[in-house]
Image (cartoon, rainbow, N blue to C red):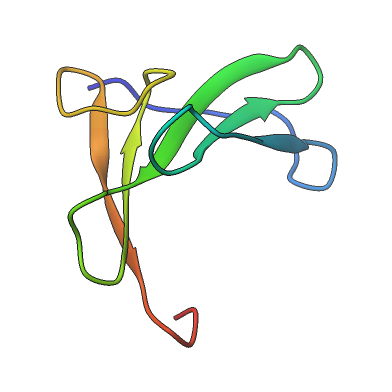
Length: 79
């Protein structure tokens, strides 16, 4: 039932995506709301997947749990 709501127009709101690389594994992408540097979500490519599958979570280290949001799949063309 939790929802992300932004109360300002899209042209004013801005986000920052930061890429970090752990010692082993795929990079983790963190998204922050720029005005007050609030953490929004993170994404990491799944290691045992064919193609480009990302796990999206509200935790700083993406994992399936109570803060799991979903999965996103991209293809070669970026669709």
